[in-house]
Amino acid sequence: MNNEIEKAVLCMVFNDNNLLLKYELSERDFANPLHKKIFNYIRLYDANMEILQGKLNPEEYEYFVEIVTMLVNASNFKQDYEELKRLTEMRRLKEVNKQVQMALDSDSPLANVLEKIQLYEKQEQKETNIEKSIERIVGVLSGDIIPVVYPTQYTELDHFLGWWFTPGQLIILAWRPSRWKTLLAMCIMLNMLKAWYSTAFFSLEMTIDQMTERIISNHSGVAVAKMKQKADEATFNRVWETINKVYERIPKLSIIDWIDKAPEIIREIKYLHKTKGVQVVFIDYLQIMSGTWESRQYEIAKITRSLKMTAIQLWIVIVCLSQLSRSLENRVDTEPKLSDLRDSGSIEQDADVVLMIERDIDESSKDLKIYIRKNRNGSCWEFMLQCLPASMQVWNNPKPF
Image 1 (cartoon, one colour):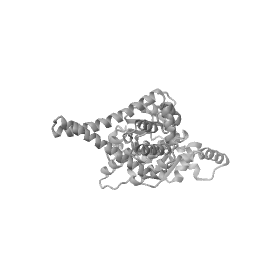
Image 2 (tube, rainbow, N blue to C red):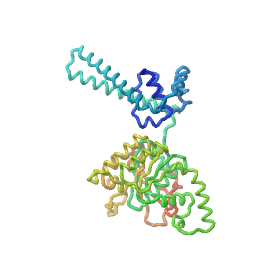
Image 3 (cartoon, helix red, strand yellow):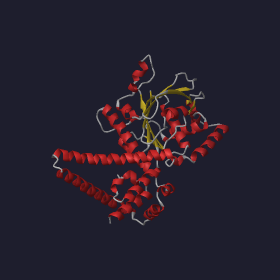
Image 4 (cartoon, one colour):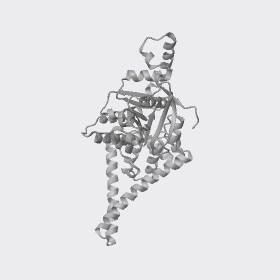
């Protein structure tokens, strides 16, 4: 009976990978060693039959095919999951009892018995996690696993980040109000979209119409201001051609406007990830978000922590725009620092990457300076991009780095 429950759960997890996000499953929940092996391969390789065939010997693969083609009732998954967890706990208690008996037989003090039990459980968990990590690293190095990364298409940014944007990251993009944060975020988002990554943009300041104008402006090169009046034939044809090109990518993009409560935004992110497979999320911007806490600093701390945990839980990238403190403008040295992040030190603590922007107030200048002020996976550096705000465009600096 236990074996059949394990097989049913494996079948449903293979055929609906979202179940791995919704339910907490690990190899410890499977008593059958081959089921442990199959579960780990499903988790690591996203139910890729070709890779799994190469990982399993012919007899194991035949057994695996038998499992994933079983006729099971998907509505029974919760019941089977709970039974699987019950059996896991029974095995754990039996093992703990065994450890206790061994300790008592050796006439050890009670404190030593409890310590051995705790060490046993912690060691088992650590070994399981390390084994998974090693298997994944070896898979990447051997080419069996293609790592999930999201290049921004900005050469120097990707170079200095060391590993592009990667799942589980919270990225902060910061500068003063109305100073091109949204411009750069939208351009990164559109570059992701061009590469067919599923993205979502939460705009807490602009409507969907305003966002759409900027997307079309970016692709066509027609200034946003010119899209608010009747166009000549050449401009109209240019915009119409752009719309036809953009239209095929629309299913990969979700724009959500005027949601400003952090819990609602996080619920929406989870819904979009589950229903549309959203991989990269942009939120414009942090200081507009509200929560349910009294102190503003505490509120921002809870929001950034919730965003970071959501990125890890869903294994996605969250890019959140943030304002810098007004005191920056009163300094002689106007280069932004991490201490300039407004409202809470938790922003720099929770973020994996902090990017800051600086641009000359001279409107004729196309230079956009980017500071990487925090980077868990690579270098902290600074470099230049080129921009044309009127038509919402940012491109690589022609000078080599």
